[in-house]
Image (tube, rainbow, N blue to C red; front, side, top):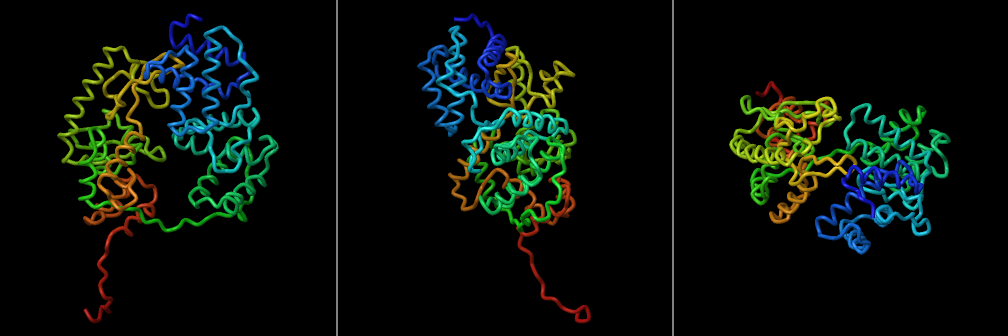
Length: 440
């Protein structure tokens, strides 16, 4: 067995082994991800990572997490290569195919487009890497990248066997028409696909898609969001455990999106001015929001707990929190400073297999979503309840209290007041009988 003294050495050996076994460079990060998941699984459930009998248990765990067959197949291949590496064996080319199915950046292969069993060439892989670089160059969010790469991969499978350099704007028109008339996807999905492909054509394929006037473009339908009453919100928050109940209070009290709440850092809270600064919200915009007086004391107590956790992290020699846009490369130790620490940190440190570092992430969105869903189930609220309903309720309750729509637009961070106007449909308005001014 190879003597791999640390994770960094393992990464170097494993990535070299991938190359020697003809695993494409574009799949390297996915194989490293599955290996990290496997090692974490073995550590958590006390399995021996070098024992092949641990692999079936790991795959079964992936299936309970609703991972697709394609993802499980790739994970099994990744771990099998790990076994071969530590035992000094060559990979078995007959057991696994090297043209592994398309895997997305986080959530695995995308289904629903009727093309999930088809594979793409390395030419498309290079185009996807270029798409990632173009998005990073413009400092777009990770969510934007994940959305755009999903649609780009679906489009690639639809266009097979053509390579990227053989694509014309006619392919884009055919695909958008297929989404509308063939799959009959929702209007919002069609708009999302259109924006993603437009970006892909212009910045990756370096071509203008031409006249798209005859392409089906769905009109935006009037949307009236679900709203919770103040009593319903109080009940929901009362059924949530710490720290998710405090996160819900911050989201409702400040009108935040979930991602904005989880990304709050200690330095974003100013207790002197009672203001919260949201950095790099949707569209990369910053904004300042008043903190509710009702949660100041609770936030102070929470901050003391966070400070204690930060102290324990420093004693354990952690490498800091995850920093925005590789800021830690400019300020090497900034990630260890308390002001950069997350207001809502994750429960445990994250092992970075590629570098051997231990860093602290913020509370993951899915943790809050699960807690919120469980609370709404217990509360038996007869509405479609998602975390975003707190933001909708914030805006609606301000409107009901008589606040100006422009003020609410600024607090929500909307670029266009027409977006904020949807909340005027959620409140009851008293309509007076129309009379001529002469009769007043």
